[in-house]
Image 1 (tube, helix red, strand yellow):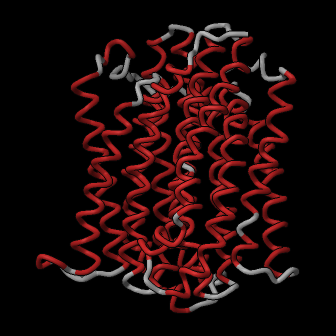
Image 2 (image 1 turned 60 degrees about the vertical axis):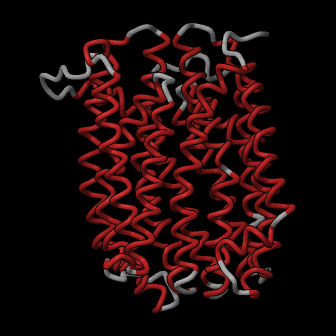
Length: 443
């Protein structure tokens, strides 16, 4: 069965997101590379603090993914005037969530991390990081709203532009604030956090300017807002809240993964932070194609072309698998070179190389599984995707805990959990999509 969505169309939607993700990961790359020169404590603390922040941001990102699916459905239905109210209601809700998230990050993290982190030095450094990083949550959630709007419309080039701006600002201020160059104070890990906040603020300003220049507001009813509609919010919540919970739980579990790793020692945590940064680069094509799958599946269903969904997913999975072989191949062939970017410590390098081999293989499994999983949520079955994610993450946590506490494995053994995650995601999502039970979903 052919689909109206060609390989070229998939690529045109996915590649700006991929380029944007590369720029986004430059931020992680830069922070890790700079802080690797500060010391193991700063490196480990930035991993925990960054993941804690990311877990909270994923509340907004998950909600935004649901909004993106709704916008893509309205685009397929040619119901453009309903897109603006969806965007406005989503932004209002995300700002309320941002207030609560700020309180959690700025104040609640002191109590949460105190009882979970063994190393006092890592704990104190993580709190220093979050004191500054927490202010970025407001800019991050506004950016998520813009991203949902543009990805839902499959106008994704702006994602590349904004993340390039963000990356350049972050690199510049990392250099100035972490080490205190050009008369700026030497702030260490706090400087890395402040640089990231300024980078997110710059991306928000770019989104605002780009939207004002390129978008005809009346086409989407963007500026029309008379009163808060609880029925509109209810419809958005139906799709978006499960995605919101899914993303939050997923990143919270990964935060838990790093807490397990921390039990292996400060050096294992530092190595895992380096590997996490490299793994994020490997995963860049996966995020691009999975986001494209969300929008294009919803778009096809909105047009009444449900029978073309599976051919689209197969095409996207093939493209994702092919493209991810590039970063995987480079990592496998040049593992020591990648490790040297982050650290000159021979112990960290030798410990990290086996972990890189493991995550490279894991990335291939996750690449295929993620595309099929995105088909489930793109179809509007977000409650089902939440259930699938919860089942997989339960196995993931049990596996990781067992590797650390029962099998007493090294850090490379713990990271094999990524292979388990990717394999389970495919084995559950593919049969579900094949069954066709998603065809009657309403968005």
